[in-house]
Figure (cartoon, rainbow, N blue to C red):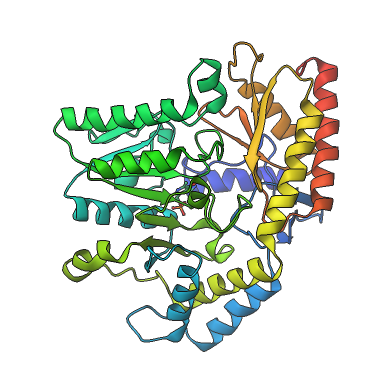
Length: 435
Ligand code: PMP
């Protein structure tokens, strides 16, 4: 398959106009015309199964969300300096999904801005600057947040106040004979000690509860509880980055941190919050904002605007009315078990892991060495794309298949993914690429 001439021209114009920073998915890019539910359509009307996009969490172009947006656009779209009931209603409703300790919410437009605000508050409150993150963490695009995002690579230097702990990669940690919980706790202790050794006070430990860029490690659970305790003992805060796991994707409850039996000091969220309309937020323990709120001017022009709030409220309606959290749990289990049984005898599939509708399939050269195999993951991703099934890959070496569909992905959609994956795996076994 190759790209038709008209689309090749679009790629060239795109490159000329947008410059070199913009990347496209797949060897053969997907041209998107429209989308509905878990399906994306190209201009010829070909249908693709969306097994990747977490932003349209209730499904692309959901009528309830679209109507709420259209209605609010007709009425008013303005900022939080005017008194409106919508933003207050939504804030109360969102906060009701959190433990009682977390009682204030501030709105931003992106997850990066939410993390940036969380970090500013943590530094203000603790008087520290030090930040602990996982080895291949991604937390966003602002200058401050890029400096705590090691996944951006060597050309984006980390701050001198940043320390990394290993990814919670139980497969490799246990293969080396370590006790997982003790290993992670020791890593947090070492990071704190190293900051202190350099005269840096800890401001925060920030972690994505799905550990998406680290290779997808929502399990094992529990260790974040001890990590948070150690960080607090050193005077820092625990910031739960729920941009990936939040709003029920992991299938048991609204928020990923709860699975670890811990209550964070600050929680950030974004991506699925408005089903594609930009809205993100940071939720705080109210005492953290008392001084910051009065003494620091923070106004986010578009953060919490009337239309984004209407979209976010409608997203909550649909998650509840269509029981999408329970759906994430049951369809997620179906996918996990299905992929495990398809790959059980493949030496190059080291692990199929995940929670709810966030599943990673780790590909290696062999189960003994556990050496990463990004060629195989790229082959599977691109062959599935040829069959109009869209997934991606993740992890520091891009060797982990990333299966992260809209939360409206149903059992029949899972069946389709599994049968297409079965075909692709068969193709790769016949070429010897998979054995
Ligand atoms: N945190 C995590 C864990 C993310 O995955 C992302 C986005 N990929 C962000 C923060 C940043 O969010 P945004 O792109 O909305 O700024």
